[in-house]
Amino acid sequence: MALTLIAWDIEMPSEKLKSLLSRFALLIWASLLTVTISYLMVGHWVALPNNQPVFENDQIVRINMDLASQLHVQHILSQSCPCSHRIAKHLAARWPIPSVAEQIVVVESPNDTTSMVFPDAYAVRRISADQLMEEYSIESAPLLLVTDSAGNVVYSGGYTARKQGFEIRDYEIISSLLRGESVEALPIYGCAVSKRLRRAVDPLGLKY
Image (cartoon, rainbow, N blue to C red; front, side, top):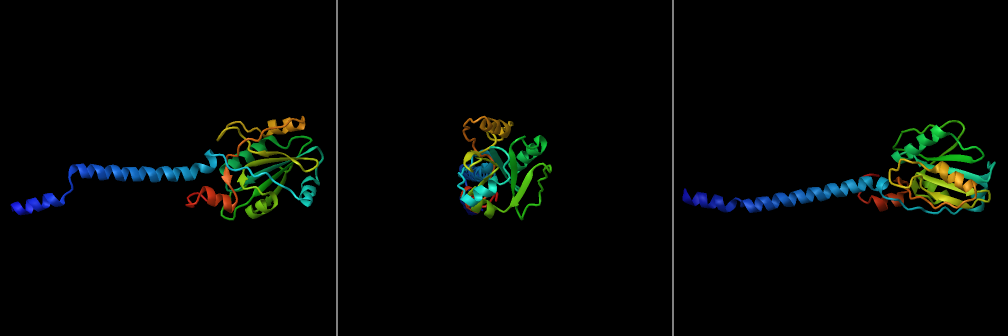
């Protein structure tokens, strides 16, 4: 009987070892949770790269062919991006700015049936992520793109000064550009659109 008790005592881990194992398991769990949350939030809380579009001559002509003023504004939105839907609601509520040609470019996702509805006053173009990359070299959304009458990019950037910022500043930015002022580009808080950027910010495929 005594030998059995001694053997049992040897096989059972000590209380100190139990505590150490518990702490180690908790540390692993917390680390995994932190990594998961970071991946899921990276597109909305961390500024995304802002690729400056470079247009060929035929693209400049196409962009400006309906231009009735000195500026042409394009709102690049992604159908699968919650931040883009927030900008879409803002645009639908304010309507186009007088004397400015505004176009909404919606990057559609075959895996997302969420719709974006705009007043008829807006010109709306729906394209794929591959088309966006091919024609604009843009990989993030939502993005505000403004060109002048010559097709030069005078603004390419975000809509808010802070992550999840309450104030959407597109009207302020466009008004400043109409007055001939230069505007510093705001960071882009939103979603990766291109396959390349999605792999870069989410290599584990937890979000995209």
